[in-house]
Image (cartoon, rainbow, N blue to C red; front, side, top):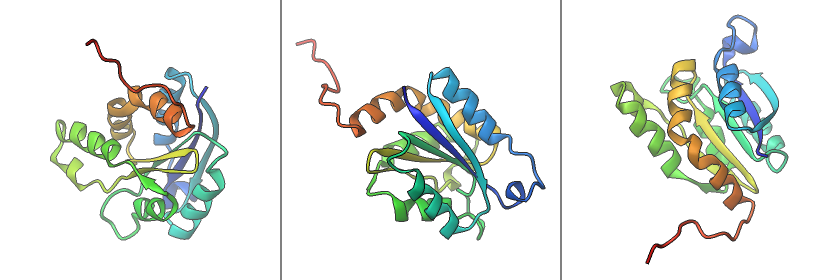
Length: 163
């Protein structure tokens, strides 16, 4: 079973000025995948706090899903903090999410979301809106179990040849 931490990044959400709908959306999708959500936190858009929290979660959970802070505003620092934490980037995950998003809105190209690995933990940045969370997670959901398995060191072949 995959263990998951959800981290919502929102100045207003962290102050109780906005109800977080994206974190619960992620949690619902993870339950559909039979993953176990072990923590859900909300932090302000502060790079140092985000980085510290990500580091504290690494090697304690298999997957960290962040929501929020992936855009272009000066307070959107989630990808920046993530890049300072990860050891290896997995650009295909973010590319797949943006590609799927572009089918619905041209604004998807403005996402700075990243994905990568630190130790044995996969970290993926998701947008801040519940609708975008659903769309982005749907684009990558099927590959997450395999990705986690490989990160944990599985030696199974990734594909089969019919030759």
